[in-house]
Image 1 (cartoon, rainbow, N blue to C red):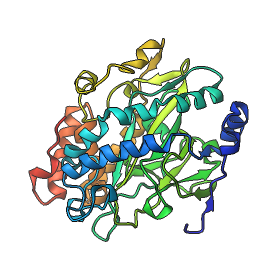
Image 2 (cartoon, rainbow, N blue to C red):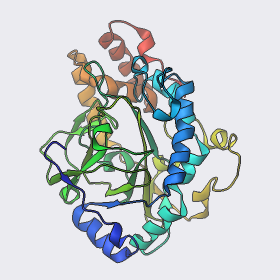
Image 3 (cartoon, one colour):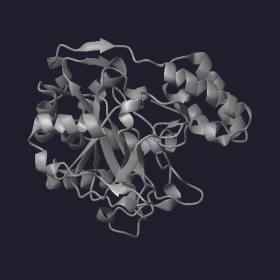
Image 4 (cartoon, one colour):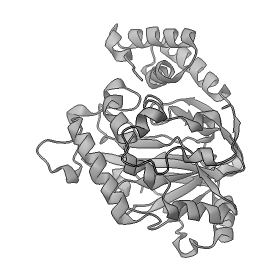
Length: 348
């Protein structure tokens, strides 16, 4: 575990909301065994692996349920070759129902002392094995810069068993007490890495299917490298007291995945569709100042030929609303990629 300690296991107090809230406030995280039913998680794993196999992500010579990655297909968010397969995974009906599972909502309601709101937007990750010419290991970062709104909490769930060497998550205990830390453009998931020394003690653990990790939006966290030959799949969703403010970007589908109407049109059931409209939400704009700082640095890095700016530029092309910035990012990507326009192809 690279010298890391193990998570403090909070399973024994999982039904004690005030005790959980106190520990979450102290440490910035909670580790709970079997909060989700293992069978439900494994059912979603089977569904997503079938879709991954259809997209060419898995080894043709291995059983689908083994999850062995096709190394030649290695790709990452937000590259278009990744998004072509990812969209069908993110839209999966049963995956969406895991994050609104009654056990999860009850758990957070116990901590908040009021109804819990699951953010409509969430993240599903597919991490190919690390190798010399490919590495999408998530570096130390905080979610606050991406999620905005009032304080909210993530739940990270591996879709299947996840030993540390497969890319389990790690958190820096107590790091949530130091505010939003300075960042730089990053190449891992999120694309915005901490650029200063990280406070706190790093801890991690192996996960069995159904185990979850909860942490504050200001808790610094990262992934361990995926050193197996398998595709590491996970999802992380956000929760907050329903009366607190939520940023507008958290009400939309994941970037590039279409509209809610289009997503729900392919579901078998209308149950839980548009569930957030049952709340009287306080909606505020996302503070995009952190992105502006990142993007300025990315433009400077790319202008100097630094390939580390590439993922940030791709995110600008796919997700920014400023046509001028998008055009500039596209041109810099072409220059970084040796003049290939195919590298900047992005669709919704």
